[in-house]
Amino acid sequence: MASPVVTRFAPSPTGYLHIGGARTALFNWAFARHTGGKMLLRIEDTDRERSTDGAVQAIFDGLQWLGLEWDGEPFMQFSRAARHAEVAQELLSRGQAYYCYCSQEELAQMREDARAAGKPPRYNGYWRDRDPSEAPKGVAPVIRIKAPQAGEIRVQDHVQGEVVFKAENLDDFIILRSDGTPTYMLAVVVDDHDMGVTNIIRGDDHLTNAARQIVIYNGMGWSVPEMAHIPLIHGPDGAKLSKRHGALGVEAYRQLGYLPEALRNYLARLGWSHGDEEIFSTDQMVEWFGLDALNKGAARFDFVKLENINGHYIRGATPERLYKVMVDTAREIGRSIDVAGLTDNRDTVLAALPELQPRAKTVLELVDLAQFIYAVRPISVDDAAAAQLTQDARQSIAEFIEVLSVLDDWSVTALDGAARSFAEARGLKLGKVAQPLRAALTGRTVSPGIFEVMVLIGREESLARLKDQAT
Image 1 (cartoon, rainbow, N blue to C red):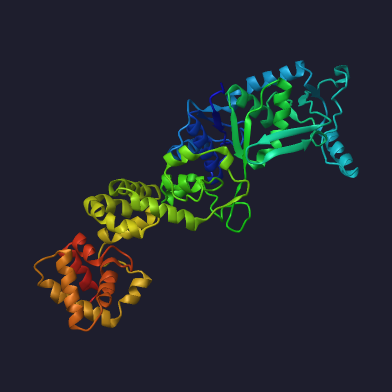
Image 2 (cartoon, rainbow, N blue to C red):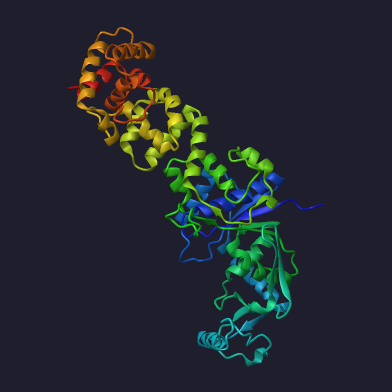
């Protein structure tokens, strides 16, 4: 019987949880959930100078916001340094590793000699077979793995297929530094083995690492986990994803107004597919997810597509849920006026949201669209709206105020009827009346139906705003 699937997400806490890391976490999570297995979280904090508590917390927060819950307590790699050193010593005792006493100057000379001979600049195995009695006094050695010197190392990969590395191109890399701390290569292998990881899903920038790590697995007689090395995300121009393309932290997408389910959906399609499906629920993704459907070609990040998917989820969300996200987002990015306006006008905003949702692709757009509800007179008018408020339009508004002032029924139907009669009497199309009204009442050219706006903000506020713009 096959062992239960165990995947792991293993970020380094040297910054935010970037979008590529979030996708790697998503694929590990989806595969674990699809198979009924577990996804473990390991914080690779061995780089003590660059690792910060704030970055660790940002990783936790980003994963939780995305809804990618890990199983069990997070593993902290640095705390396992003694175990890593223990394995290095066992490799020594097995004859699979050795002490190396080379100085930095000697290593630099080796690299220089290799370059001069037209060879790759790497360690030449000087201490591989020397007698330890030749060791210089007072020099703390490193421990190097004994990499095979002939033959091939084959990486069986679910995405890349079989990848073959010639052993002659590998050197005897360091697994334990002279101060007794482990290198990344050793720590990763020991942790994956001890955590019971069965499947490693990570970026294809780790593919050459896989060959080196297999040397350590073989040296310890451990079974090698199944591997899937996924292509990195590129920008729309095909270049490696950078900040100008959208390589931001997950928290930045939250602050820009994206919903977690939309980001999950979009990231799943960056490197994985199920037929031609573009929009699918998280439950559907888990049901369909498989390693063999991971794409070998690099995915391209597309903000337009992300916005369209986000708009789909905004349209399908409940007003109550969106209202909370709007307030939380405005608060997080420091828009205190919007926080106050949204909270003081909760019922009106909730009533307006069904009209606003089809018009927005991000939560921030929803906040902007809702501002007409709590705007303080005289409201600010953007350039597009100002273009609607011509002299003729202002005169028309002044005349329509007289109609509204004697209107008994302040309902959408009554306001709509009054505007149609007003327009017809002057030989105008309804839009010629409605658009200036929208500009005067909301300061924008996009809003809910203008008569719905007038009902939402009420008779007194509507008339006051119109008078501000009338001639």
